[in-house]
Amino acid sequence: MPTVTQHAPGSFCWPELGTTDQNAAKQFYGSLFGWTFRDTAMGPGEIYTIFQLGGRDCAALYTLRPDMLKQGVPPHWESYVAVASADAAAARAKQIGGTVMMEPFDVMDAGRMAVFQDPIGSVFCVWQAKQHPGVGVLAEPGSLAWTQLNAKQPAPAKQFYAQLFGWKAQDDPMPGGGGDYTTFLLNGQPIGGIMPMPPDVPASAPSHWLTYFASADVDATAANVTGGGGRTMVPPTDIPGMGRFAVFQDPQGAFFAAVQFRM
Image (cartoon, helix red, strand yellow):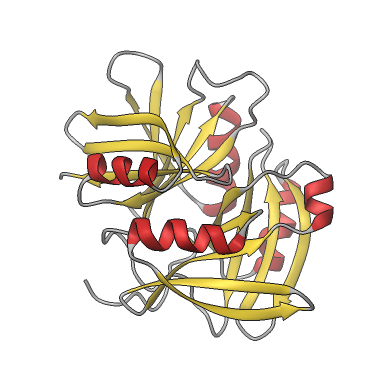
């Protein structure tokens, strides 16, 4: 597929991993998805790693700072949404019940970003591109394929994101019950979704965005996760009429998923 050079406002554009062991995470994901990487110094003792797939940027990695660890922030994948203006998005988020956890700031000449929390507690980022548009590859094995909000309260989340990004919500009953799956549409195209928090998830678990990477063989990916020291949280499972997916936890504790769409 061609290299992606821009992302429409309102689309997911960048997955970023905060972890406790940067070198171990490089090895795990590099082996799992065939990613290479390049490192950039962010400051004294801080390195920002950009993963690449076939020479195209596909994700990023940094070490959680001591202040974040003191606040109890666990290793996690963060989701970025493209916006035309980070400042305008921050102002709008405040108006509709969101919290701006980090006010908009420039990331050198790469772009401008901010960190938000939605009304049900999920954290996400926005990205106003300048020199760096975001991922250069989508939907190929090893690249970003889907982003899903596991929500304790889907209804207020749907309203918030519709008002913030203009997403349209399409609800469909999930196979086997368990409520509706909401597909978010941007300009008529599916870009992400919401599902009710699975019943077996601990009550203390917050609502959160889950990053899905494309896989050519979800079962093989699951075997490789286990072989690399990770855990399979949801085993490879068919999505009737859609494909197959699985949910994992990497060796440092961050959750992510793999999906093979068959449409």
